[in-house]
Image (cartoon, rainbow, N blue to C red):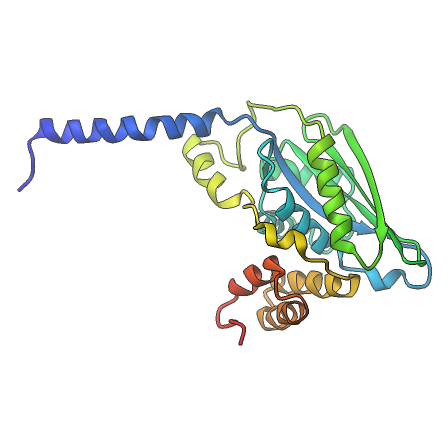
Length: 260
């Protein structure tokens, strides 16, 4: 038996009162929206090609590491990849400032972070990063870290700490989330396209450069919809580093690929 119109109105009013604070909080969130893009291979010497492809692994690991930073909102890597595919930018290679601005604006980001890495061929690697403002195209926050090549996750951890501690990004509250205009779409999009923090366990894992390349290749195969190849590569990573959470999470996204 249905209640009276007055009762229904009271129920709807109560529900609106409960939802209003959450909606207001979402609309008032002025933390900068940041897209971390892929990193270029700037290595030198005869072994340069040995490092091709690891930029995507560096990108995802930085996103995972920085997702817990409460001062910013990070766009999820899969969302970034969808935009690259839609804009036919997946095979263009390096990220230049014009490409960063183009992709960042489509994503609704206010800043993009990207850069490069370089092996000197003598056991050391340098990782550089900087930001680009989507409104002004201005470059800023140039940062550099250096470590041994066989501790690539340590290198990324150091860059994460440097970015979290030193980066300066001004809020731009009038920019919308995503590339659609409605507040309802923005609220829905924020939940599914912002990166989620990983557990502290990953911070104890130290991938060597060879395993990072396998992981990066797995991400690339997954982006290309070659799920069988991607699953096999993720399993290779987990066989050597079973606590590397991002590999397991990506493997779990592939139907029928559960580890034995």
